[in-house]
Image 1: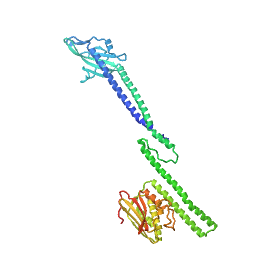
Image 2: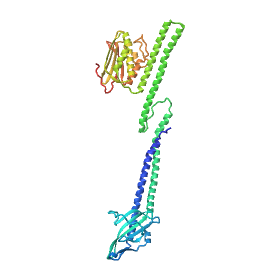
Image 3: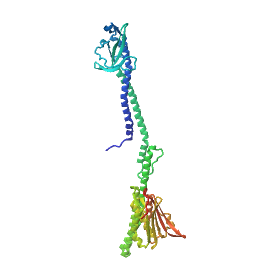
Image 4: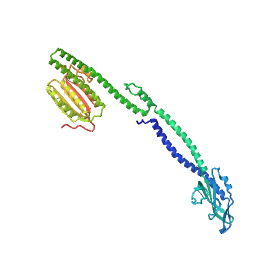
Length: 478
């Protein structure tokens, strides 16, 4: 099982690894710079040694018999040796390259004098190997003159590198100690800062762990770091949705248990009465069938109400032509319209709206069914679907008794019915509640208004407005 990544470890690695990488590179560069600094310091000593040797040279003889003589002994070089960790070797070559004094096996000079250097002398410094040891070599072209003759001697001075390397290592060691302390300080600061920065996250985790199972109240955002605010906002929004779903589920269970209890009790009573023979069998079956039909309608509408909430929380809907759905629903209800002998008219225009097809169908079915059910037989029922100003508007006009003042206050609440408007018919009171939930989920508006003429209600108009799908302007219906 893969362990989850640690924020503290990620920050430590993200900060300390580049620091370590920089220290490694800096160590290499620093060691080379220390060696260069040591060479620059001790090269001056080599040059001073070579010049001291040059001061001990003279020219003997004349003409072709000229030769350079040296009175220097090796013990004179001890003054130029810094300590017993470095040794000096020298060689003095005459006018024709012959050995004048010094170590005959010292490698001869094979380079050129640079045209520019830091010293006021014809000198060159380079690295070489002598007797299996690395040495630093200084070559000085020293003019030698007598009363009547002059010439150029070549002086080579070699020094072993122990002292230079020791100095460079000492500089490097001192620097590394300081850098190690710096890395330790950085690590401690990072650990402390990470501990302080992640404390709100740990406190939030503890607060969530200590909450009760049904506690979906928003998390406090006061005093939270700015970086945590998007997470807290998203979490609070998610918890708000969960609270809404939980509340909807509780209400659904409560309403279902309350509303289904009555028809089931009635059904039980009717069955007991039929068994005792209190009513004729045909009448008992008719009453039972009516009760079952009401219970079935109630269960279907309650499931429809729950499905609206499920669609609200589900995938985004796609574009649907509201006009096609409306015509299909009207065709399904045509038998009921014909049964009541209604003067039915339907005028539609293409209305692309973003909605689930089931939601549009359920919205149209409930509104049309209510209008057909409450319209007086033989009356006029007019349905129009128009598009204007980015909205699709559905108007359903019947010639019923309208809405009573008592119902208007609780118009779209579940289980709200108006028996005064239609005393011979009964319903579950969920149709308008379903319509309201569907319209609100589609960012629309629904209204029911009485039409009044000369102080009398002449009918009811149901109006639903839904936003048109962006980028799809409506076209006139052919």
